[in-house]
Structure formats: structure tokens, C-alpha cells
Length: 277
Image 1 (cartoon, one colour):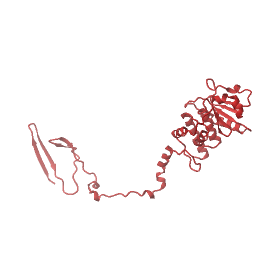
Image 2 (cartoon, one colour):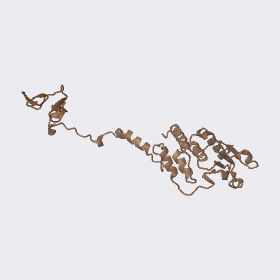
Image 3 (cartoon, one colour):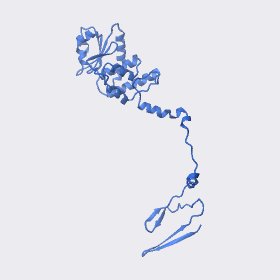
Image 4 (spheres, helix red, strand yellow):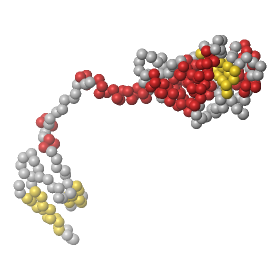
């Protein structure tokens, strides 16, 4: 390996540049001590990087090749984690099959399910389960209609002043019992504390000979619908999706997002206790 040089003269300074000729063979010398070279026309420029490995110096035809693994021979469990995460993000909530593992639905999936309207089923009162009725404030105040339907128990989930303020005195003289809950139709209201007490009350009322229960709030779509769903989940062994589909087949309902999240918590807890999850 030899060296060569070249000189540039100007009116102000003289520049001497020396460089080394590369040695013969596939290897070239490194010049880490000089990060820049100087060009009389373009100024300083970075040095060219020398390959760090022998493999980078080999021709393309001589480089080692790696065979792609045969995906068909890989264990099935290798891709299960990602598949399960995708299934949880997009659960199949329509036509749930009990034989298959239950996948808790997301909030957006529940809201899409509630947006699917089967028919114009919204009226003042509807029977959504044998002897269990879901209605609004108008139905709760229609005493003649309650007697006609044979209602024996009334559950008011919108009790209190400035709401559906009926109370036990309103039904005085009628052969029925009253149960009131002062709940707000607010996503931040904790309605879950009433899930089990109301479910027990409904179950006891339905176990009475010829017992018929009306559960209502102001509109009969959010607060009252939520506790009816909780009853079906707790005592009828339904999943949240099955309970929604059961009720919505007879009446359109629309629990607010906070109540849906509380029902999701109940669904997960019941799923763990029953072995669904």
C-alpha cells in the first residue's frame, strides 16, 4: 500500500491532501480517526463508512440465506394471544352459543346491540319476561291499567321528589306492594348497589302465586331496564348480551353508558363465579 498527494494553491493558503491507496483484496482499511474529508469544491464531507462485518463485503450470491419457517408446522398456541386479543376487541355478541367460551362484550359492542331496533315496541308498558313488566311513569300512574294487568308489585326506580313521586300512599287501597329507589339517570350514579336487593325482591314477588311485577322509571328505558337486566343475569343465569336480547325483543331499551359499565362488572363477576370465563 502506497501513498499519493496533491496540492492546491490559492491566494490565501495552500492545502495538502494525502491519501492511502487501498490494499489489494476484499478488505479495506478503516479511517475512524478522521470523520470528515475536505473537498476543494464542496468543503468538508463525511467519510464513507467501512463495512463492520465480513458478511457485508461478500457478494449477494455468497451471503448466507435463512429459510422461512413453515407456519403450518408451528404449534397452534403460538398465535393464540393475538387472536384472543382481536376477539376481545370485536366480540361476536349476536346469537351467543353457550357451548363456546363466553367473551365479555365491550361497551361499544353493547351500544351497537342496543341501537339495533327489532320493531317499534316502545309503549307505556311491555311484558319482557313471564309476569315481569317494564314501563314508564304514565303506566305506573294508570291504576286501572295496573288492575287490568293484575300487577301485584310495583318497583319504582325513579322515586323521590321532582321525579316519579308516587310512593306507597299513591297505591293505597290497591292490592299491590310498592318498592321505591331514588335513582338518577346519570352515568355517574352507582345503581349497582341496588342490583341484588331489587333482583331478590323481583324473584320473591314472582314466586308468589299469580305474582306480576311492574318495574318502571320515568321513560322505562334506562334505570328500570338496567335493574331488570341485572335480575335476568343474577337469577335467570343469563349473560349480559342474552339479557339485552331477551328484553329488547319486547321493548326497546337504552341504559346510559355508566349503567352499561356497571352491568359489565356484574357480567364479569357472574362469569367467574359460574365458570363462564
